[in-house]
Length: 206
Picture 1 (cartoon, rainbow, N blue to C red):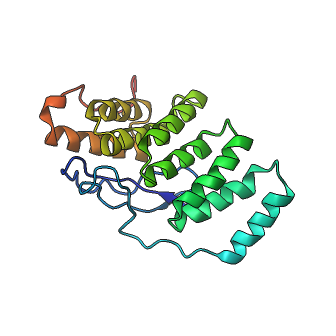
Picture 2 (picture 1 turned 180 degrees about the vertical axis):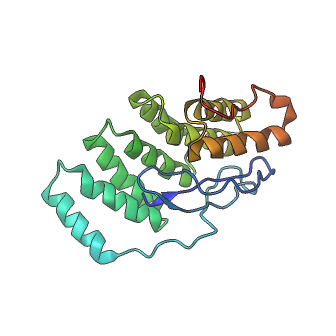
C-alpha cells in the first residue's frame, strides 16, 4: 500500500507524534493516522485526506485479475488502491485474495492485518501478523505494527513493549527502530510501572 503511517495514543493518553512510519509495508509514502485515545480500538484516518478512488484503474485491474486468476499482483494493487481510499473492507477482500496466491509474502500479509485493524478487528490483525512472523520472524514493520495493535487495540502494554523492543534490537537505526524507540519511551513515561530494559541506541555488538 502507499501508506506507511503510525498511530498514536492509548487508553486516553496520547503519546505525541511518532512521525511517519508503519501501518503498511508496500511502499514508502507517509500517512499519519488519527489518535486512537478517544475509542481505544476504532481506527480512523486523519491528518491527511484519503486518496480519490481511480475507478478506471480499478476496473482495469479487476479485468486483469479476472483474466489471470493465479496472479497476485493485480489483487495486491487493488488492495493498495482501496486502502489508500480508506475503503478497508474492499482492501481486505483483495489483499485476502492476494495472500492466498502469495502466502509467503510478509509485506502482503501484514497489509492485510493492518486492514483488519482499520476495520476494528484487532484479533484478526494479530492472527495475520503472527502469520507474517512465521514467514519472517525479523520483519520489523510487522513487529512495529504488532506493538501498535497490542497497545491501541488490545490495551496490552507489556505485549506492545516486547514487540517494540524487538524492533529496536533488530534494527535500531532504521525508521522502524526509531519509531519503536519513541513509542516505547513515550509509553514508559506515561506508565512508569512498565519498566523494562532501556532501549538500545545502536545495533547489538556494534
